[in-house]
Image (cartoon, rainbow, N blue to C red; front, side, top):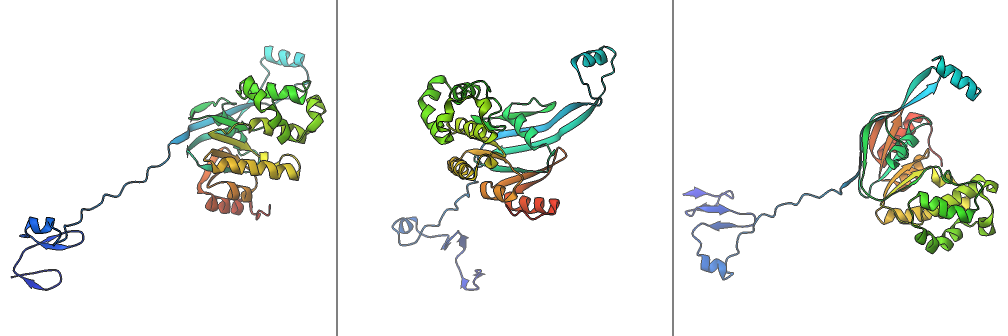
Length: 299
């Protein structure tokens, strides 16, 4: 006489299953006929597949050489160069930075001035070559760094649309097709035919933003661009960026405002003196950043 787990005596051996306890000598024909339920098979839990990595930064370091003495003229520079009296000191803007970003992540980069935020973005965008380490990027990337920095000041706004667009890799036929859309979004009106040297910084930024965001990239790099232009244009540009983010664009976003990072990002990192000192979910990292700077963000 054997005893089951329930304490009920039985002469029959039992077989343990997921849902039922079935006698070992059950007639298979009865089971097949549905008179006795068949034992349920265990379902294997599928592991959630993570999105692929689209940006991988490994042991990144960027070193700058800063001249110790001020040189007032080109002649003095060459004299010092020949006499080997040009002294420099080394400054590491970034050191041993490791970072992996997956497709669809929206990563906020926080840090004080001089922490290395813009330098990191320039390395990822391919604008700046690292001194050591490597950066691997998979996907079409559009960097919104210094908006309008690539304009020719003697060209009109219209001419710079083609000039700046070609620098971003857009075909001339594509720019021609989207020309009116760019002008309309920039809100420059008749100023589009005025040389850029007569533009205000806000007008240049608006035109630069309008050209750069005419396509929907796989990776978008933003360096304080939500603070350009007047209040109306900032709201308009933020709305466009939000629309792009909702479509699964991978975003790197530099800002001094933790509230902007919380609003636009799901992850964040803190840079300090060229090193990543914290990384994780945006809520946790933004709280840590506010604690570090000792000021509650009120933006």
